[in-house]
Length: 485
Ligand code: 4AD
Ligand code: MG
Image (tube, rainbow, N blue to C red; front, side, top):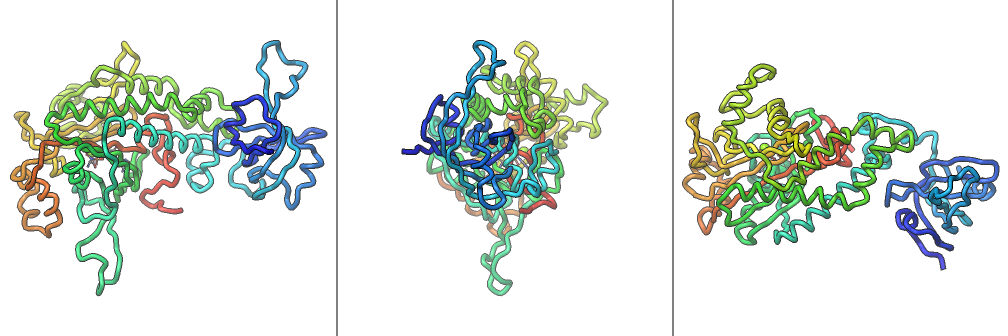
């Protein structure tokens, strides 16, 4: 009987006498008597080589088997006869000698927007529904899937409960006014009396869950109507968020992030999609694969990043106040002067990450935690700190910054004391529309010290893989002016 196999499974064995493979034609080459086809099915980067008799190939119905068509092939998988020029010891190559071939979905190679030649990332972004068929985009999506698997496994081992938080909410967690409003119903009969928004962060709901389940996490879509046209921003992005209950010391939260990111790199290094990306970077084989060389960060840079993420000693931690001092010592060279009380610009973050974070001895970029930002530039839910510098009050909070990218994660201790939370919220919120009543309730009944964080999932992928734009880490990027298809 015929066995059905994926390309990846077949490539890992030496012989299969009666096998069926389904996939897409990635290339057609002609010789006098036969046609050589490269077949991919998404299971791995390397295509399978199939050899089809010219008469079988030419006898296919309709427009025939063109580049891009979906086909089903039956035949035998065996080592190919070695050419006479082969060196002794040269590894055998394999091929599917096709006996039967069927077209499952035809294609017109001439009109197909994907061609076997270099296409810029910008041009591929204009066809997001098709670009996942190209080697780099395809590889990225398989790595994306792998990272989700690794995270789920790691969090389960750490005994965190995976939870789901709502996408439609009434609150703006970060208070930055960058929410997408959700409209439903009619003015006479609105779907909801309170204004509804797409969530900017799962955190507030996650805190409620943490007060019942202990340590919790989620990987959720989050939405920000920022008009930032950068390689680090999306309007719809995924965030890995976690809350740690009964934790009083912020160092524990930062330690956890370090352990988590180390586990992601460790896990990826075991996966084939990751090895294929490395191979793609080092040995592009086809014209369209040249894309990777041009559009990926170099392997040297990546090696430093991975070394840094796998570093076992604690990553550097400096306070915001110290960071401002260092930036001021550097003096000139910044477009925005570093000033205590103002947010760090991305040029500041980059400088800090590349200087404090660079460890020559291990040739690594260590991610850097910047802690204790001024209260006036951070969100209401953060815990007021004991560690106030002379310049003004600060929160127990941190950002994790990395070279090239800037902010990869943000987190804090949460203000668990009701009267301090009210202080943070300010008088206008207290007489407000009751949007945060429920969040205050959490402080009324059994709120322990707790803290948590959010890691930009798409940013993490771009940092790990060296894909320069976050827009190429998601299948369908959403950003200002681009929300289709
Ligand atoms: O720093 P942010 O705004 O923090 C929060 O939302 C917290 N409530 C998270 C928490 O503690 N549970 O966002 C967290 C991370 C950032 O560090 C960044 O990596 C990513 O989310 N991020 C974005 N990623 C892509 N596009 C955007 N527009 C992003 N905005 C933030
Ligand atoms: Mg932040």
